[in-house]
Amino acid sequence: MRKVGAFNINGDQHLPSLVQYGVDNFRDAGWSFCTPAICNFYMRWFLPDEIGVPAFDRPEHGYENTGKYTDAFSNKNYVYAIGNPGKIPVDKESRYGNAQIRNSGFGIVTFDQTERTISIDAWRFIADVENPNPLRDQFPGWPFIINQYDNFGIGADNFLPEIVVNKPNQVIEVRKTGTNDLIRIFRMKGNSIQVGLHHPGTFTIKVGDKTVGSFETKPGVNNQSVNVEI
Image (cartoon, rainbow, N blue to C red):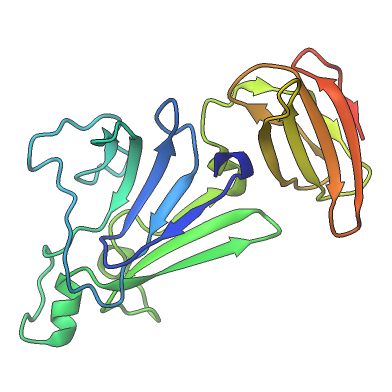
């Protein structure tokens, strides 16, 4: 998913979460949004604070049960927001109240194709969407906005030279020289870009658009190369 800068949307009857993945290090990959379920009968919780798991690098908002955690499979997860059930006053005799206390709700993801931003909302089941109060109507930590390129993760500090193309918004492909391993493929914004990678090396750059069947290739590119025009 990191190779294409993909934003991961997922869910079932689970608690809402907003997590940035880690591959080799914390936060060096893309974001994941587990949406609230509209009917959450089987409740889940994520409560590391209550069982004494230490929190590292908690987000600026300071909400409980957020920060950097290594799970049982050694995955490195940065939990930015979590929507645990059962801690809001409701009428438990009402089926709508039961839905609210079980953290039912719905998620909305808005992709701005011009600005390349991703806006993420996690609404509670009972919410005043016409006059919203974020502290009351959305789960704590939402709404949240990221950029398309945030899904490449932090730590991609090996920058290739600026690549300039003659047509805007082309697909750019980066492959490792020798092995031909795919490192990056995504649609760039505008006519130029400087690609950041997590590991150094020499690469082949391919730029074009499959819809028109036209691609240009530039081999032997590394961080010592001069600017590339394709």
